[in-house]
Image 1 (cartoon, rainbow, N blue to C red):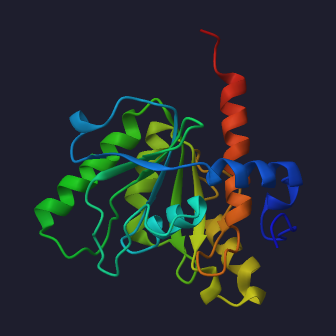
Image 2: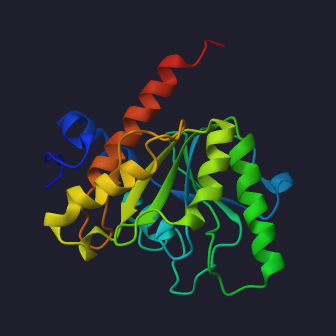
Length: 229
């Protein structure tokens, strides 16, 4: 139920007004902005950016589609490594979503995988408009050693990131707290990690309204601290 308290996260602190603001924000028209295969091709900043990162096939494109309520805004595939560029989507509220190439297994040559991994890391470490990275993890597996290089890079660059567990529908609700506790323990000493951990399912919609509302709150906070021009 949208806006209902979730004992496994601080989403219970989100107000009904924030939940509604999140719904309206993501119900606005979204459009493809750009696909960048190199840092030189990254588009000029048009607003606050949030990026979605994670292992190949963890559900980044599916989560973007669920947040925006668009089935085919971001291309999804059962083939790991389908997203090989930085894909930018924008809406009229000056919010930009960035779909990053996945890491880990991918059906592509190693040199190409290395290239798009360097592209993603370069973007994450240099983009002033980037307000937060949402690092997606499969709720069934949690943190894996393969996630460490990206976590290390984000910590070094002091880029704020939040862990988002996907595919919650494939975990028993009774196990939610234990799953989140294990992930929280795994990133407890990481300086750039946001303390809250989101739990989502694009199939059932679990956690989607709360994640939208959290992004609204992030936008408000970033606007409040931005120096006047």
